[in-house]
Image (cartoon, rainbow, N blue to C red):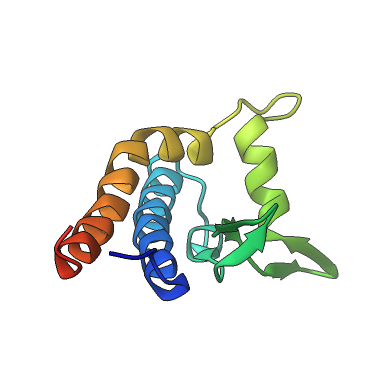
Length: 122
């Protein structure tokens, strides 16, 4: 028996995050939030961290782009698209992707857990 190691938990969280990254990239494309594809490519999973005593992993837009003399974060571009602004309808790609991939994310994490349990004859 025994508890899952930090490496096992990391593997579980990474499996789920991979599903989320794929879902968010697909949804960004479906909502046509791309010109150069930079926003879509900016979606990345971070490293597993400890937050409030629990191991977590975040999937976020990274980096920025330069348009003329202006530098704009990909997160800001995504935020405006996600929630909209005057004259621009919201395109909630991230929310929709997260909701639609919730079951698959859980299944990916459960598969890692199941493999671990079998390895321990649980």
